[in-house]
Image 1 (spheres, rainbow, N blue to C red):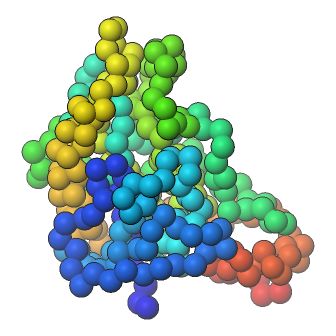
Image 2 (image 1 turned 30 degrees about the horizontal axis):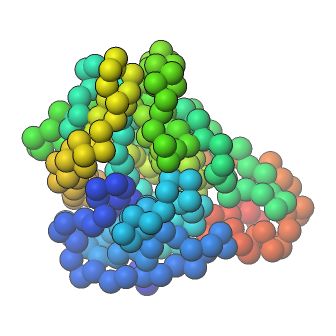
Length: 288
């Protein structure tokens, strides 16, 4: 199969992506187990894309149960170099309202039970996560969103909580005091693993509610579902705009994340680990 240019991960409310043509389902095997679903491979705005619903077909996977390593590894095996994500979030600021969209540029990890690195079994790598979002993708998304009837906020921290429960009021007030922009349950692991795989990453944070930091207000699931449907349509328009506008060549450093990150001596890396991680490591290591 010819390499795919773009990966797209859909979250709650975005289980399909309108406008994808010549679609075929592709099942990927990975050393980390099965991805959330078969990849929906096709063409969007004339470019090759692979779409994956992170929660599985029919939304069967909780945020903790998602196999993030398999999902990102599958994209890497498909040849994807740019990964676009969309996910539902709660707002932690008065100025960010439900149905707005945020382009986070930072993440804070409050998860507890999730594997989030490819590097184990005899190989150690420390990639930089100082700037976890691809600047080229971000700039292109801002331009694409300008053509969509939506209020966009550029920048801000995404706090990734474990879930699947929503925050307690005490947690919500604490996180708000940290100055974060939004709260969600899925994007931190995707951003880390994409960086380790040298894939550009960007997420559209689709605001559905104000979490529960507002006095006498709690998360209302019916309200979330209504706002999700509204946000999903706008997100699909922005994603299509990004895919159609980006030039083929990458103008960022995301594809060089491993250049100085692998600390294990090549000769000390077990052959089984080399083979397992070949899509990620092969071009960065000398032949054994």
